Length: 312
Ligand code: CP
Image 1 (tube, rainbow, N blue to C red):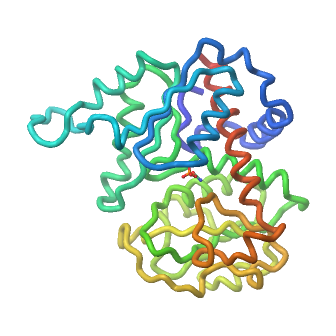
Image 2: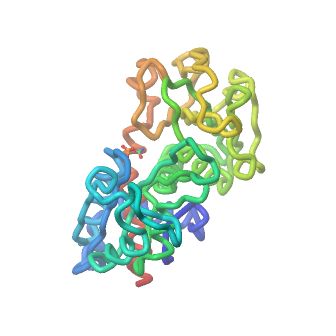
C-alpha cells in the first residue's frame, strides 16, 4: 500500500482487523520495522486522539515522530496553479509537500472541511495536494470527507464486542450546537458497507449524507424504528450536506439516552458533548465503548503504518 487516504485503500478489512488485534496483544513486535524511519504528523486542525494514538503507533513500530501544528505555525499555503501570490498565502503546496518529504518517510495530514464550499471541500486540496506533490506515502488523519483511521478503529471495536453472526448496527445522527463535518460518518458508512451486518442510518430529514456514499445503505427517518433490536448504536452529529454545512435545527429529541439505547452497545468517535449528543447515563455505563474505540485508534494507525513500511 502506498497511501492510506480512505477506507477504499483497505484491501481486505477482516484481515486488517485480525492483524490489528494481534498487534494489540504485542504492540512492539515490529519495533525493528520503523527503525531509522521518520513520520511527520501535520495538523491543520485540533486533535487529542489522532495526535497521540498515531504517535504511539509510530513509536510502537520504532519510528521517530515529528509533529507540527501546521494550521497555527506553518506558512499559509497556496494550492492554485499559476497564481500570482501577492495576497495572503506565502508558500505553494508544490514546495511545501516536497520539502516535508525531505524530512520524513511518511507524512500524515489532518485537514478538516471548511463547510463553506462543498466543491472545494470535496476536492480535498490539502490532502490531495500533499498526495500529488509529496514523494513519500501520505496518511489521512481526517480530511474534508473521510476519517479512515477512526473507521478502522471502529471496525476493530465492533469485532471485539460482537457476539452475533450478523449484528444490527445503527448510525444515529445527534444534535450539536456547531456545524460539524461529515468525515467520521462517511468513513463509518463506507466501513460498514464492507461488513456482514444489518446496517441502518437514521437522521432527521435534511441531514442526508452524500448519496454517493450512502447509496447502498438503508436510511430510516424514524429513530425509534431504526433503533429496534440494535446491537451497536454509533452516534454522531453532522451538518447538512444538501444545504451544505448548515445546522438546520438542534432537535434535542435525537439525543441518545439510556432508554433509547436499550441493550445495545454505544459508540462515538469522541470528543463528545455530554447531555447534548448523549446523556451521562450512557457514557458512564458499561454499554459505552468509547474508551475502547479510542484505545483501538493506536492499533488502527499501527496496522496502516506497518503496511506502508512493509511496502517501502
Ligand atoms: N476521534 C478523533 O479523531 O479525535 P481527535 O479529533 O481528538 O483526534
